Image (cartoon, rainbow, N blue to C red; front, side, top):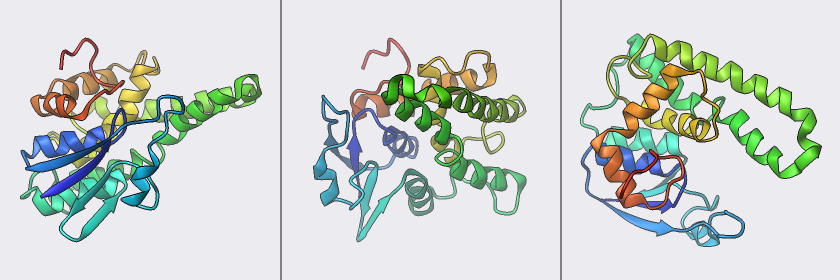
Length: 213
């Protein structure tokens, strides 16, 4: 059985959704952010040296990093689900967006978050960050305009990875005018497995508004 070390209000929510979508049996060990700093508790470092979430334990394996966790769970428990056939264009899109979600797509969002702590000192960075965000959201919007999901016409692991940068952007008003991106977020957030994961995961700022858990 998989144990998920889950931090509230974090990217770990995607892993909960994945396991609910696959209808797996799993256990959750909950961790709560420091109310003053918003940081993860130091107790997570006893699980993995990086002290971050998500982390999963399965048999003798301890896996960190969301993309690696998604790949591991789909390989170990997916039974052929949530991954396109190797060698197809859908498969190459799957690999691309599985890595893009925590790489290029998250970079300007993180820059925006961290620079906000600098106040006026961050002003020179603002146009650079805005341009980077536009580049990435234009790219994602163009892709989703021609696809129901990130790797074709069916749900795959890439969609679990890509939901967080889009949810974060939407919650901060960054998706105005990006109708395909908004439609994707709304569609994923309406899935029964997603809603079950919300119930189990605890407080999550980026989920659907007015959702009664």
